[in-house]
Structures are given as C-alpha cells and as structure tokens.
Length: 381
Image (cartoon, rainbow, N blue to C red; front, side, top):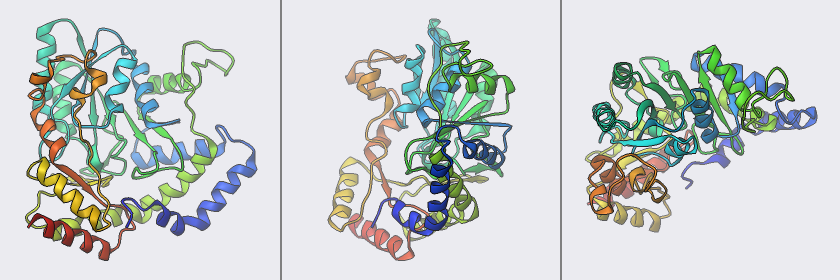
C-alpha cells in the first residue's frame, strides 16, 4: 500500500503524460517554453484570478510575494504555528520577523481570534509594524478567510494565502489560491496537483504586483532580460514540468478532486468514534492529507507502530510546532525559554503530539480504505 500512489497515477495518465513530456523535449525550448504560458493561463482560469506566474517551487512563490510587497526589517508577519517550515522560513529571509499564531483544534488552520490577539500584542510592544498574515490551507482545507479578512482589514494587513496543500479546495464555490491579496501554491510531487520535480505558482488580481513578480522571478529583469532593474531571483518553472502539470491539472479537474473527496467521505464514514477531519459548512477540501487526532502522543505513536507492523504507511504532519523550531529561537517575536514556550500556542503544540495522517490519494481503493480503517479501529480498542 502506498501513502500517496504516484506510480498508479502515472500508469493511468501514461499515454498523455509520455506524449506531453516527449513533445516538450522535442521542442528544444526547455526554459519558459510555450507550455509554461499555456499552463499559467489554465491555472489562472481554474482558480479564477487575473494573473498566474509560475516559479521554481512553492517556497520561492512565497518569497516572490513578500518581495513584491517590499516586506523587510521592522515588519511583523503572522504565521500559523502548525504548518510546514517554509511558511515561516521565508519571513526572516526577507529580514522580517515571524509572529506565530495558534490554530483551531478541529480544522488545523489559523485561529482568527488568536491572530487578532497577536496583532495587538505586536502593536502594544511597539517595535514592529504588522504587515502580512500568511494563511495556510493545511491538508487541503482553505483557512477561514471570511474571519481572517475581517481581522486583516481592521489592522491593515495583507493576506498571503499559502495554498501549497490547498489547491482545488473552495469556500462557497470560490477556489483556493484566490483568497489572498497574493496567493501561492506548490507543485511538489505529493501535492494535490504535483509535477515530477519542484514547481510553484503565484496568483493575484493586482497588475502592479504581477509585474513585480514577473521581474523578480527572472533576476529582476526590466524591459528585457539583460536590463536588470532590481535584485531578483532565478525562479522559473521549466517546460517539461509545465507539460507534466498540464496533464495532471486536466485529470485533477476532470475526476481526481471528486475521487479524493469520495475517499475522504468513506474514511469518515468508517472511522466512527475517531476524531476525523472537520470540514465546515460551505468549505471543500482537496485532501492533501487525511489526518486524524488521537488522545495523546502515547496513543498516536502506538497506533502508528501498529499500522507499520501491518504494512500500512502513515505520517506525522507535523511533529514540532514552528515556535519550537531551533532556527526560530532568536528570530521570532515572543521568543521564550523552552520551559515556557510550550504554552505559547497550546493547540498547535498539542496537535503535534496527537495527529496522524493516513494513506490518501485519488486512486486509493475501497479495499485499501477498509483495511486501514479496520486496522485503526482494532488498534484503538
């Protein structure tokens, strides 16, 4: 059994995938070939925004957004404490200060009430200017953007949607990667739509920001690539990866999103008595992960060991909250001694001890779902 079966996906898509890759190779245009522009148009149309600019990976996508806004020293950027490292890593790379915010127990996403508390704490301290909130669509579920937007508007914050795991999710029909002032996603192979290497994209309706990102991703180019008007990056999606993504985006839109939601519904149906993922009314997840919550670390670790013995893969996303990461010990706002820091974001800290992600992908079989659920329920008894 595979945790996310990319080999099965390839076998299903093999004919179209092989042709797309060979066509890209035969074209000789390996960087910024026509497939890249085609893909950007397709992604923008799918998400429902004016501009999509692809780049080398999801981390660069976040960096490009912060650069377009001129985020830097003296700025506070609010980041959920329960997320992948890159959501916060990009902040000190621009010289700004990450401020960690707790998350909601049931959705795993940023808690808008704790966001407002953190903003007021920064304002009271007086050293930093609140600038941006990075709202992460964790495990495929969009964050609570209606609530986050109210706080952002109240305090003049820009919203950077980190949709690395959320592509394909929605709120009342509006799709993920359209909720931020700038939104980003990742095409890492295991993401809802992934390529065969690294890749990312930035989405926005703002013409000026899009023009800046277009420049920053190619060495700060001006009217042409040898007229460099700012210090930029080298962050382009290569043509072969764009060709791969064109095939995968079509499959995702045609049937994979429906299939993965059906698989999630079956998991939830069978796992009675287990704390399964909560999808608020009007929200839809793209199920980058299917994550259950256990009583405590002891129960979680015992369950994972039991599943491993039966050949069932599982993963812990994430075993350590952001505020306890060694790299942020001297870089984040409210850095505290280890003895006190476990109380900084109590929900996130607790979730790190209790979450376990189960096998999930559009091609998972009914038999595999039943096998996993029976193993989970038996172990928990």
